[in-house]
Amino acid sequence: MQGHRIWVILALTWLFCSGSHADEETRLLCDDPSVNDAVAMVLSEHNKELTEGNQLALYQILEAAKAQNESGEFLSVHFTARETDCAAGGDKAWQDCDYLQDSSKQLKHCRARLLLKETNEIFAHHCSVEPPLVAEPRPPCLGCPESIDVESEDIKESLSYSTSKANILNEHTHHFVLKSVAWVTRQVIAGFRYRLQFDMQKSNCTKEHFKEVTVECHPDPTEPVFINCNSTVDVAPWRHELPDTSVKCEPGPLQMGFVTRRRPSGWSPLRNIHDFEVKPKKDDSSEESQEGKTKSADINPSQATAVVLTPTNTTSLNCPSKPWKDFVVKIAIPPRPPPPPRPDSNDQVQRGFSDAELIDVVSE
Image (cartoon, rainbow, N blue to C red):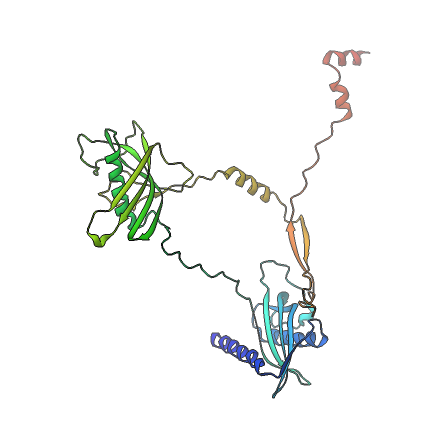
């Protein structure tokens, strides 16, 4: 089956390209009766070949052209079709079917080439869903910083040097251990330049008893003190030199607006830094989102409005043609809230009197 499709595509390509050898090509009106007859015949032939699914029916004729060469006169057509409620292999002609009013059913593009004779012989035809246009990826910016994953093995060395130097510059009596990493960029210069943003928390290890952070150092829960840092690390491995590290820190943790990775308990530069837990992203608009979901869930599917999609002609050749039938899309709309209950007149009268006054009225 796959080989048959490839053959059809190759045949269509050759047949359409053969039009370049024609003496003259003439564009035709999309609503020309001869073009409509040709499209009807192509769709009938296509539906006969279907073994599953639903038949197709014409939606719009997009373009048509006639060409003449040594073999005769040819007609090339390009049109769109939609799936119908008639099953493949049925007795109904596609003209007696209706569109499936389902917006998820994609529009199919059909192309055909016919040799114009008394019977209008179909040389080739093919219908398929055209792939969406995808923008070509931009070439990388040479020398520009690029974001990299904070869990990448590539940042381990730069992060270790950054946290170590942050502890050296920090005048606190205790070592600080990594808490989370906000972002990392890498730039190609005369080597690699890493820029990192992270925060650290005071540990239980004092600088008096520990020369550096070890596996015994943990965040101190009794006195939560934080610093947040920005660092730049220049690495050139071929120089056999230590990375040039610059760190600047400020008191306090990172702002929670960043998507960060939290370190596991007991992390130090001597241990693997790739076991970070994914920190749940704070969604400031969660209440609004829930409210929106609640409103959409309250919509009754039976209460919907029908929107008829009717494209307009855009060229002097009446191309594309008017849709063969209207394609109706149902859009659900929320019901109106019921009006507040109107108070009963007797209730209003009674509310105007106190209990004592009502007793007097009854006694009278």
